[in-house]
Amino acid sequence: MQTGTIFDIKKFAIHDGPGVRTTVFLKGCPLGCWLCHNPESQSFEPELMIRDGRCTRCGDCIEECAEGAVSLNGNSIRIDRCLCDLCGACADVCVAEAIEVAGRDVTVAELMEELERDVVYYDESGGGVTVSGGEPFAQPDFLLELLKSCKSRGIETAVDTCGHVAPHLFRSVAEHVDLFLYDLKVVDDERHREFTGVGVESIHENLRWLAEKNRAVIVRFPLLPGVSDDEANIHSMGEFLSSLANRPRVDILPYHRAGVDKYGRLDREPRLPDAEPPSEEEVAAVARRLSDFGLNVTVRGESL
Image (cartoon, rainbow, N blue to C red; front, side, top):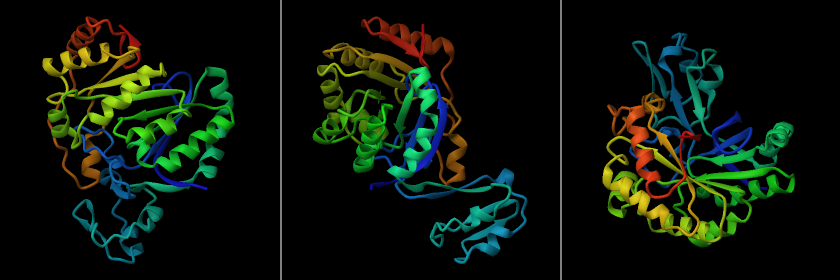
């Protein structure tokens, strides 16, 4: 039985595929995107996250930590991450939930027990299970067994992927996926390497293969200020997607700042801390520009 590391499960999700869904977030990603809104998804290991605003300064976490990794600095909790062994004892005793462990190991059987509780909602709404991340393909054996288990129980599957996967591995798993939510941020290889740390070769190859096989795909285009919102990238995006054998729907996902505070909770600094969401007018202009290439374009899943 495969064991994987997840950092969240979102029930009754309505934006990660059709119908009512449960979205499972796998931990770990090969990309280092500048404006990642889930920075706790990037590392493959569990991590402590701190909410100073919730801390009552009772000191229970300090007393509980056998490694001496927890301290208080004024009104702020401090974690010495070099000393911390991620046992989770500090989080367990924190009644204010100011400390949490992002990431836990589960078996496929344990996860399926939770997912199957909502089968009636999947069936009635045309929904199912979406596996997101992080990057789901970064835990390939766990992902494959999870998808097979869902399909054996008649549960529709979707995978939210960046596509940075060895093609042979991607294709071996794809037969168990009903819908791909395919993130595509930057088309140019050099700029993609700058903003994510990896090139586009396998990303483009896997998307072309899905189109050739007429697989169900929704391309998710995160509209990120200073990263993906320039005219050159939008033009390249339109050209590339319109050249595919089977043109996918393109769903624009405008940047939001909901994930910015997570960096501080991980003792990290965001790469672009002052980035602001695009205006509705800017989003609409990008949608029209992509539509000019003959693409079916939506914004946050909604038709124009």
